Length: 348
Image (cartoon, rainbow, N blue to C red; front, side):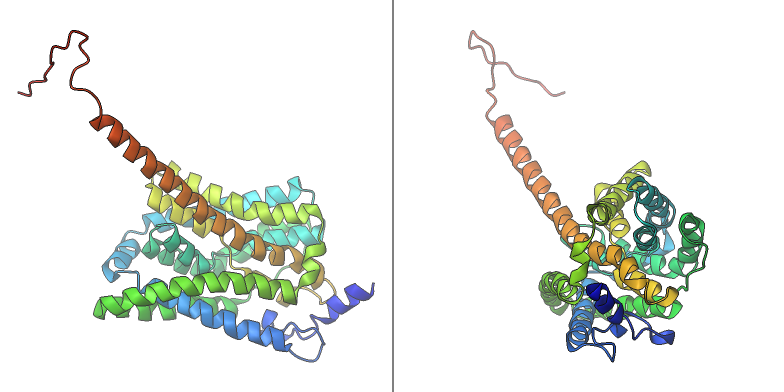
């Protein structure tokens, strides 16, 4: 009981338009020092990552995706139509308690997060398509999030949820602003841009480690969850990857684009989900509601790293097989005639 009281007190500074996890405290008087450090470090790292991702993009390729947004449209179908429905089904299949189910549903209705652009780069995906999808998903979330949440949440609650429009716009600005600067730098000074890409890639690794560390230090109570919540948090990312890839392949997208759609569908915007929850529910309910998104934040990073790792393993195996097949081809004898008579093929 005392532990739960402390958890509730850690969410006491949530009010008005400033409500977000940056206002979550452990003393009830103001943001903790660790939380402030976390916000500054993670935000700075994210800006650097998006700046670096912009440096990988050639402007004309980005324009192509906006002029013919077929790939992005397929991604939006997976993101806002298929994934919320499957998330709803998974929550029922796992028989989650109402608070955990709502947390899972809100998470599944959120748009993709900025880190999907970095993972797309690591997995040899189409970064311009990834950025296009992140932009469109964030914009469409202004309408699709409330629609999906209203449609599916009635199994557990009858109240409407407050959509954090301001935070959605801020999220969009933090994605597009640094990326736009990076695209311009790539256009003007390509050699410098390529160096920044390498720095941003290192920042991405650091960002993953820091985000998992800060989440674990700030919200250790999430690890006391039931196995069902663990299963759901791990499953949602994996299901998102699978759904995105399957939908993309059904529309005959190539493997590069399919990987990109898979990553965009499987990596949701965790801070946006947490902000929506803090804006919409009484503070005594928040500790139970945020457990799923917090655990999802951990598993989304782990599963995304596994996605990239499996991609490189598959790529290495394929390269090895191709090399071996090439060696076998060159070692085939010119004659399989047992009498030793040479056979030749005449090309006319």
